[in-house]
Length: 476
Image 1 (cartoon, one colour):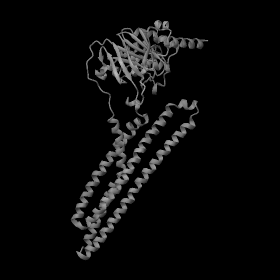
Image 2: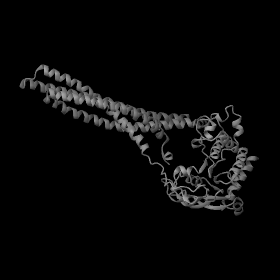
Image 3: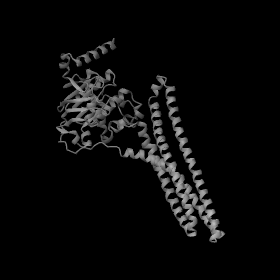
Image 4: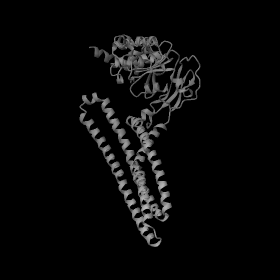
């Protein structure tokens, strides 16, 4: 997706600094452009009225001045673009350091992170100096051509006074009007750098606005009630820049209410398959169907309303426990429904022990909760949605054995009458699945129930025995 491909620092820079720069500078540029342009046109008209011959001298110098300003502006545009990119890099470096502060401390990364910051900050400073130098050059260059224009006007005036009898009073009036003309010209050419800064920021913002959005689909209606039959039909997918598909011509189906478990080593395609169902990933070929309808033909909101998902990467938002359980389109859920979801996720007792109960804050990035509590809160959020299809992607990976046992019992009850796709490293949690698919290099290597696969003595049995051995060694 766009957010997976996009650099975090650059995205944050576009949403904040670039957008603010464009809005602020655009107001300044438009104000100066309109005001000074009107002043220049009016003063040139006055100069023409006084002496068209002397005004022509000024006109010879004006284009040269503006062309020079244009050349400097093009140079500034490149410098400003480099500055914006380096600002984004600075945001990324600082953000990574703050988020990974414990890793920095544990692995003695102080010097490394300092070097990264100093390097980026040094480049940013150099770009700023180049921009300041180019901007500073505009004023003396403009002043030089203005001086040439004045010299030319004086020379022509001396000639006219001897030939045409130009009076001292007329010449003084002309010089007075000419002096008033130079100030708006200086201000206008001086805006070249500011204008380029605005244009570069606008390029960055508009590239975000013009980014390709997710296709909404053909708005085909799902028959109600949604049964939750799911089918993957010959799906193939390779990530950008890779010739090896992570999922290769894979097919399987799950009837309404069934639990299908996906098992395999890292990189076998488990999470990719799960992400295809809510259209986070679109397969390069093949189809994913719900109740016989290709999900590409469904409106995105309609499709995703049918799916709940708990991922191994728990995302919670700053706010209260209630805000995170009854999140987004489900904020209208009653307290009773929220408590029921918390009960099912074995988190209700913990929440009741908090002085503020459901209104207790979770903190930024849920830093006031333990890893297991975050996982259970995410499960409660998925459960309150009560959709016919449930995806559990490593849903119990962050839980201790006791918490995992409690939640697994709750999930076994809640999976009834709900089509569930489970991805788990702990094979003990999927023994009751209707079917287990063992993936290897994006294809189904084995398929069957837990007991059938153990009897087969293949890859699943090997993975299960390995886990059982590790667990036994850990208990000794």
